[in-house]
Length: 204
Image 1 (cartoon, rainbow, N blue to C red):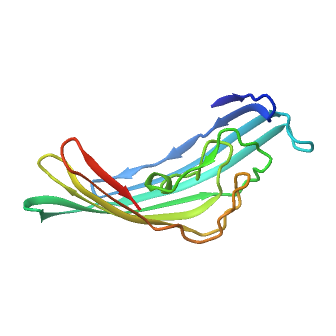
Image 2 (image 1 turned 90 degrees about the horizontal axis):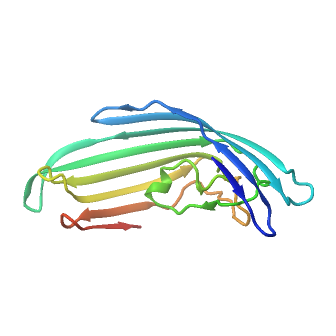
Image 3 (image 1 turned 135 degrees about the vertical axis):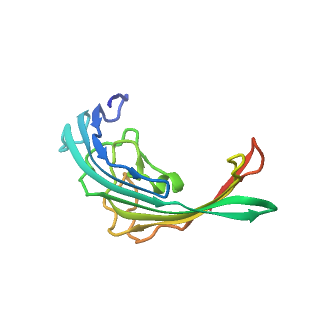
C-alpha cells in the first residue's frame, strides 16, 4: 500500500506498507488449527517533522498467531422442534507481536478499535498502519448455536469470551494511557433469527 498524506500545516509525508505472511490452515469437520507468521514492513518519508525527529523512518514488525477451534454437535429438542442441532464451539486465539519503538511516527489515519467479537480475534488493536500494537495475549471464547437442520436457520447464538494479557502494553497513540492489567472485560454475545428475514443481536 502507498499513501501520500497532505495537510496545510501539519506533518505531511508518504507511507509505504507491506504485510507478507504465510499460514498453514488444518481443518476437519470437528476442529480447525491455523498457525500464521508474517512481517509488517513500513517506510515513511516525512516533512515538517519536529526538530530532532528523523524525516525517514523504517519499521519492521514480526507477527505470529495461532487460531484453533473445536466444533461439537448434538441433537436436542427446542421449543417443540425435534432434532434441533446444538453446537458447542470453544476457540483459542493467541497473538505475539514484539515491541517496536513507534513514538516518532506521526498518526495519519490510525485509531484504537472498539472491543467486540471481531476485535478480540484480530492481530492489531489499532485500525490503520501508523501503530502496530505490541501483543502477548490469548483470547478464549466458547459459543453455542441452535440450528434448524431443515432450513439451516440459526435460531439462537450465544457466547462468552475474554482476552488475557501476559505483558504490559508499551505501544500507544498520542495521549493514550497504556494498559497494565492482565485481563480485558468479559464479553458476552446473544442473538438469533426471529424470522426468515429478521434477526436480533446483543453485545454486553
